[in-house]
Amino acid sequence: MRDRALAHVLPVALSAALLVVPAASTSAEPLPRAGLSAPSEIAAGPQYDTTHVYVEPGRMAAFTASWKATFGGTNTAVTVTGVTPTPSLTKSQLIFSPVGTLSVFDFQTPVPYPFGAERTGWLLKDFDAGIRHARASGAHLLVSPFSDPIGRDAVIQFPGGINTQVYWHTTAPSYPPLATVPENRVYVSADAVDAFLHSYVRFTGGSVVSDNRRADAGAIGLPGKTYRRISLSSPFGKTLVMVTDGHLPYPFGREVTGYEVTHLADTLAKAKSSGAKVLWGPRSAAGHGSAVVQFPGGYIAEIHD
Image (cartoon, rainbow, N blue to C red):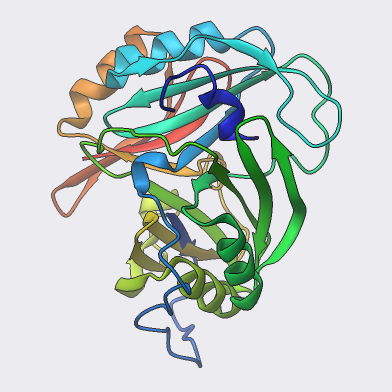
């Protein structure tokens, strides 16, 4: 939904795609090593890029309390407003935590299509330039631009069906930098990965940090198998690209963001004591741990150290 609709309560108000492929699979086309920059700098910074969280009805307070107990941070007051271009009503709130910013929604009416399927909201410095650049990069407009009292919004879709909301504020907000930048975790198919990467890297102005074609698929619940794991970095933040055949055990593919913490065990203890439950893990590999956690209200997140 629209992050701008939340920001009126304040005076100021990347994604990973992981590809699971058979060990013998290779990509016929090399990845782009760097993206083409937009006509102007359009990314405001990762602290302005929010994960969109749609909680189960009546569970916003429980989710917010659990999240803050786990990671720390602050939140705005809850408002009841319309955040879509067609009539709807939702409770909405921003959470500012050291590991990432969240836009939280508890809809009081049915959610208009296609809202609810967008993963994140990205703040643009220049909205019109961003829309032109999205189209030139091979993305298309899923929701055409619409206005709200403090800015403008649209939803773009990258090849592979990855939806992202982009927005702009009439008055530029000012948020503090994050302690750690979250990872946008994107799952795409082998058929779509090349088109997705070329569009996504070009739009974000990103670059490939690593491309492991034989990564341990135990990290996504498939021990004994390998997959292709691509790490990207851009002015919009971090992205992990996982390309899969769609044969994923629950809860993998449900988590859209990965959060970095200093001590995983301590963080999981805080999460469990505040009402969250561990769905998978913790699992350690190469000196790093990972777990998948579901918070009150249904939001699923990956957490790693």
